[in-house]
Length: 369
Image 1 (cartoon, helix red, strand yellow):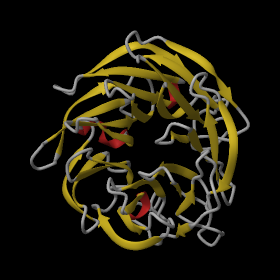
Image 2 (spheres, one colour; image 1 turned 120 degrees about the vertical axis):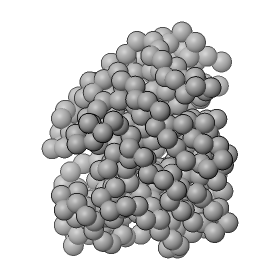
Image 3 (cartoon, one colour; image 1 turned 180 degrees about the vertical axis):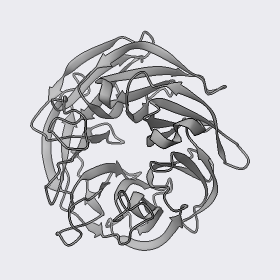
Image 4 (spheres, one colour; image 1 turned 45 degrees about the vertical axis):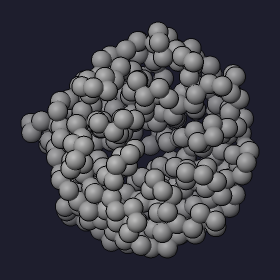
């Protein structure tokens, strides 16, 4: 089937570190993956700054964070998805147990959701949690938190690493561990995960070079490797992943932009292509997509080229369900751009027209029934 749904979150409430707040809520669209035509389905309001969102693995619901400066706790809200119309129906929300909700993900079973808080309030302010886990019911609604953890420490950059700043959370492919990117302490923090209860136990940390600032990360779809995109250093780190031990070992570090752009660039999202041959990162400032090739033997990702993102400040990237299209949320150009992905060469070719949407910060797809 060539039609897919996609949802876009954005900034709709003024925040000092966003240039604009032109979103109106969670926008829904229908995309024809063969022709590139896009139909606007509507906007779900009643939510503040849904700057990150994701469709659940079973496609029945969508969960979004609310990132609001000054709140001691953000919120994480769940919506049921009507698969025919794409309409969202509010289910419920839960507190994120910390300020500046930044990211969320689902475990492999779809029974749990985790969120992380970037946090900018004084570290003495409660509840000050970095990561929180929630049970997810069959209808997609979220239960009260069943696990939460606090991070400690600081890093090399006094302006951006004065505290841990959790920025991304994902489960390992085998669902045995939960991993958090802590931008402020240059670490990927690993927790053992109990799939029966949702409980977390501190397990291990993978250290990056000082001042790297890991923002997002992703696991290889079929090989024992993982990759982090580092906001402050504008680099991509390749890791070997020992699934049985639940450990990551740094293999390499490579710039995501040409040397001349390093001084004014801050990386954003990272996506490994479905086949595992390439990965892509967003370069904010350089306003490009970094195209990396992954060595099948060593797992090391090497920059091959950069491609203009189709707008300013590419904050999020997402593949459609076919794996043939890459969507880019250009935050400061109020648009989504699409690219055809060539799985053999890694080439990205602009596809279709730009989709107008205010201050887009996150994209998530759902296959139509």
